[in-house]
Image (cartoon, rainbow, N blue to C red; front, top):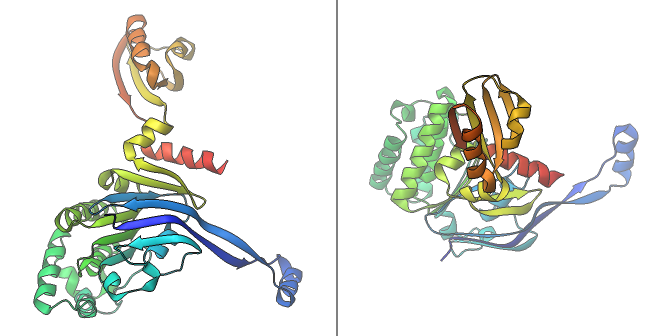
Length: 326
């Protein structure tokens, strides 16, 4: 059975429409006008137990709004959602004990206290016995390479250390569904790698489902086999990460190094010339023609080295969103 179900889920906000300037402010004060903004439009998807799903979209696409509806923070305007058999906005105690929401730009740790004190408070809130709480803190801290950081005031921790402590606090009650909104935001490369490794190990040990939003494609490629793309509140794609390349990138990138300098006109029969620097060229070749074009290239030119790769996934997704906006 799916642990998360969205069925034509939608959210519309009624916002004030105030004209600019002093005159507009006075008219707005006397007679207010409003407009409806659709933040999420008829989104439908399901997530199975233990699945890690990337939830991608540009700023303002509706990702955070969707997460807030799935965690019960806001009420949907249309459709329905179901998480672990519960209606999220009902805020049932059993539902809240089995989920967690981590937002990279928010914090739940008390600023002036050691992180350990906040963890003990969380354990009490979720009725985790002291012995179990200590064992879980030790386990999670070990996975994240935390040691003395738990006994230092939160305000004295680096951003990476603080984010690791936030994850310990969010997972102390062993939730079965994790909603993660930019969990590696602002972290350095080492801290990002540590968080990814931790999430992967937690998923394997606890069998928890994870819905992950991130602007760092390295997070998605490292953790997610499946991605959901939304743009302007609407669902664009739901499928495998490799499927995005196959469906939306009909070309492959061929990097060729020749024995001597070549001209752009000489390369045009083999593909679209993306760049040319002396003896090194980058070509875009349609997948269907790839074998034939490469064979012809070797037969007709003096090739020193050749590599074939898919275009970067972030370029494909960025182009897809740009075309969607157009």
